[in-house]
Image (tube, rainbow, N blue to C red):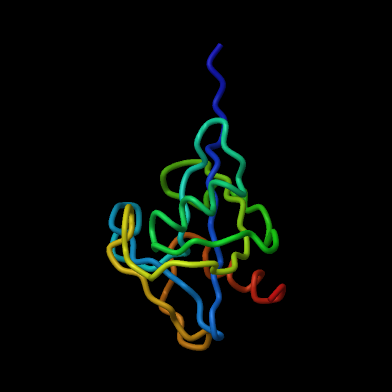
Length: 132
């Protein structure tokens, strides 16, 4: 019997000088829209390692996990299907901001002047900012 199960992703909340790091998506869904950096967890990978890897691949920044923000599991949160995201607050350790992998642009935004965000990332940011 073939069982359906959700896919697992991670997202990183990186704040520096009261600004939030966002990527402009290179691919669908939400191509050309802003989002938190993140992506799919690889088989055998811890979510903490996955978020550090994904943020580096998309932004060029080396980071470390500070706090868990939460787990976002609404089956309708992603148009690709049932995708569960584990979200972490990260601290920058090293590197220079540069777009890569699934990001066509990377930018820090003032927390009071955020663009429209993809997926449920606006709600995730509200939760994250309560923890910072």
